[in-house]
Image (cartoon, rainbow, N blue to C red):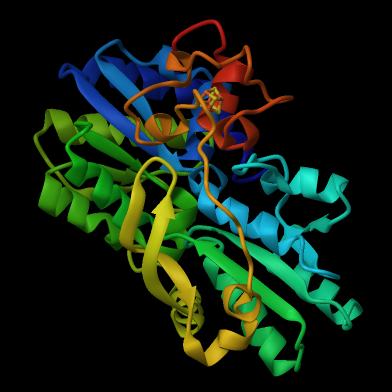
Length: 364
Ligand code: SF4
């Protein structure tokens, strides 16, 4: 199959591993921002293939994991509105909020349904015109344009019972916040591929320019990641600091202008609350006033109650790359994919789930 098989070829992977081993001399710490990259790295044992002077740490690029408990509590409160249908991506169901989860709300009688896209939720709204349908808008720049499109579609088609709660987030501001914290020193960034399809690679220029950290945009197959690491190593060893693309089949420097236009038409940047990082100005997307009738937060008075963090869970530190799941006392004991305590164990892109599934007995 074109564009999949060739990026899993062991001879290509082995060649890149040899290239990295031959070229890499400097001790470096690279962060993969994206949870999709984390899963590939663990599934294919990429950390073990790299020389010991290359440390890979996982970043906050899992939309479910970074959704704060306060936002989760709002979503759970929305599920309690009489007659409401909550439409959500499946990973959100099991994530525990302060007191409950959407799955628990469903078990208690709320109508919570899994969808694959915002357009499924629009269809649901059309088929249930006497009930409010609230779509939980979770995701990064990758997802935001389709959610924007769903709001425009609802407006064009006169659908009056469709609402979105925007918990959407923008990646560049949170990377800046993590770097500004000074908590972790990085020598290279594996930039997110899917996000970059929309934003373009130019979105990461500030990291190279302002922080002197080499950046390479990567795809999601093992050969993509190894190629990305080889390019980062090459930049470090030749003392260059640029933004490069190791995912040419998906990413252009300027991104997808149409998708960005859609996103900016419907949403405006706002402060967002990230699990583990806190409030980051300009890192969220709020529905613009022109489309306020679709904004669930403005349409419904909800009482989410006080927010509590799960006791003993260190998801926040894991998301900032300063600790690994193995540092968590609950990992594999009180917290497993069957009985998750924090979101990083629930999400298919979560670091704790990746460690649990692929590296339970070793440190990466
Ligand atoms: Fe949180 Fe569980 Fe991960 Fe610990 S293992 S950080 S409790 S999700």
